[in-house]
Image 1 (cartoon, rainbow, N blue to C red):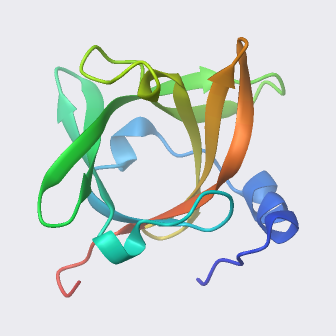
Image 2 (tube, rainbow, N blue to C red):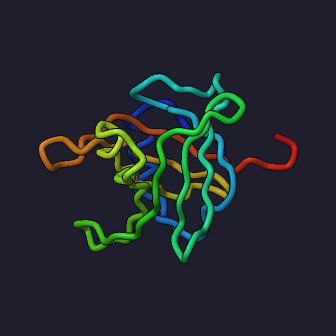
Image 3 (tube, rainbow, N blue to C red):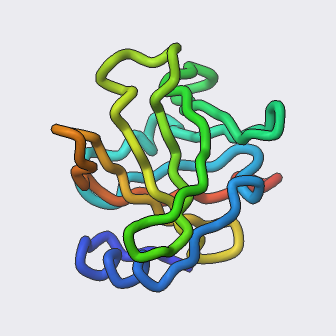
Length: 140
């Protein structure tokens, strides 16, 4: 499935998509910023997810193996009583600025996810752009 790169079209896709279970995200995923801030796709931007002590944790990677932006996954219930999967960057190893990132993720296809990049400002999440996560296959 090819995702659009226009916010209005992505809003519709995101609204219809289901929230995955945190255990579903496992392994390496390519990241592509679709709207908002510039994409780091040219720098081979990936997210790595793994299970540790019953929780899914991970980090971002660029270039060959430069790690940054550690996170954990949490399942929450949103205002609409709908289950939401959040990538939460509020971990001790991150800088103050990174700790405010809260990405919401929905599954849109087999191994393909659409995320909303949000930043907590004055206690509320502020939308900064959409991104995709695509499972890295054996041939990629």
